[in-house]
Length: 345
Ligand code: 13P
Image 1 (cartoon, protein in one colour):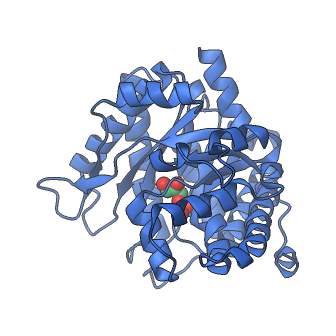
Image 2 (cartoon, protein in one colour; image 1 turned 90 degrees about the vertical axis):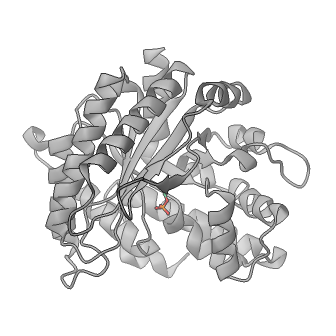
């Protein structure tokens, strides 16, 4: 079991590839559609996910795709199941299993992620359908005082409970504690909060018997808040990100992947590239114990969604943009992304 989980975890980020998240809940997907005038229907969501999954060449840059409960059951227009299409493209299927966030009582403005009820049964169902990994996201807001100890502990414990259940079902848990970008905080505060959150998550993971060799950590890059007057450059972001991860992520973890978190698509690629280049250039004594890659949703999907806008006659151009962004991030993950790649999508 440990060997299988570890093999799947490594496979997700092998050959310079990363993950693509298309696991937006229906309300989130609908919100993104509404902003572009796209119909907010089940068939529109199905058509968008079909466009993504059938994009020619997607499997060159993407090792795993994270699906949503509605999506994992859907098929293309010829009634070929999405899971079959992914298998044919050599892409491992994953599934988001959290049930979203709710207000944490007595902690104003803070959230806890729900979904543990009946999770064992749901995981078994997804594993039988063919999913090989799972994802659960918790969110932490940086405020003057927060995140609170209560919020950190509640979410760290829940992430660990989920991860142990996922491994029991034979699924690799992607553990996603997302420290949100919103706010006026500095990059230093983001680093301190992220370090505290990650340490709590790994302490709880160990308490719950999670096998570190059979999981993937999905984290945000260390960035200044979106309203911080000082917007640090690539060098500072890279230093803060690598320092924080080195201090908080055990060497036994087989892969660390970044979410995009609302950064612009090209900026996310540029930052991933800088982080990767520094990591790859490090002398042996500073080499990272885990491969770094990406697990983006918006930074891969959004430019393509803006082309598609629900129109069949835009589908090919949208697919080309989607695969372009995936390939840019594959290059970035290897420190080989150059801004001039953006000239020829
Ligand atoms: P973004 O890359 O849009 O942040 O999404 C990643 C994700 O999967 C959030 O759970």
